[in-house]
Length: 243
Image 1 (cartoon, rainbow, N blue to C red):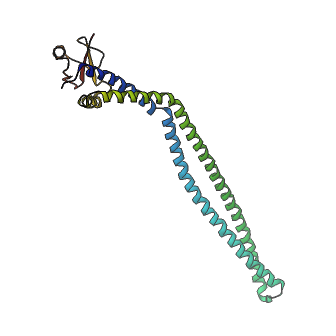
Image 2 (cartoon, helix red, strand yellow; image 1 turned 135 degrees about the horizontal axis):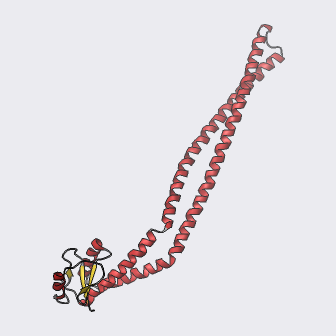
Image 3 (cartoon, rainbow, N blue to C red; image 1 turned 90 degrees about the vertical axis):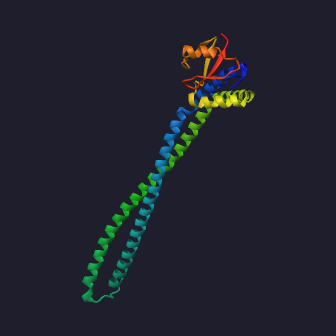
């Protein structure tokens, strides 16, 4: 594959831009805000499930309250009716003892129902308070989420501008190079980033970006300047520069 020495050297700049972009994206992707937002999302999901369960508890408790109130009303109505019959002398003497016994049982039943009513109303009050607490916690979570997002945006405002600038420079450089050379570079970058390019400066490998044997290096140095070369072992692109 042929490419001018200038275009080949531009791959070093392209790699430098890609490394900087990779680093900044990594910093953005690993910002502590992401972990906190995941934690807040988990708490919000737990709270949502708890709120659904709590709504069911409140509905069940309200039904219990309504049932007990209906029982109290029914027993009171029956007791008042029987007491009224006795007061109006509408009960035969032979039935008075039995009716008074029934009235006494209804008073006992009412006492028991009123105790049950108090206990259920206390449960309802506690359940509604728990639901109110959940609502307040949900509101606090929403505020935490918004504050965390704002902190993330503030922390990344400058770096996002720098990242956009790098991406713009990268796009301009990409468009200025031959499409076949870019395709080869992108393919190698996918496999070897951030070391897609091995620089041979003045006939010597620079940096710890790849290993080239003396024999292969000799072969590289003997190539025409416009010949693109890939490392035999790794497939990295070799770019030759002056010392």
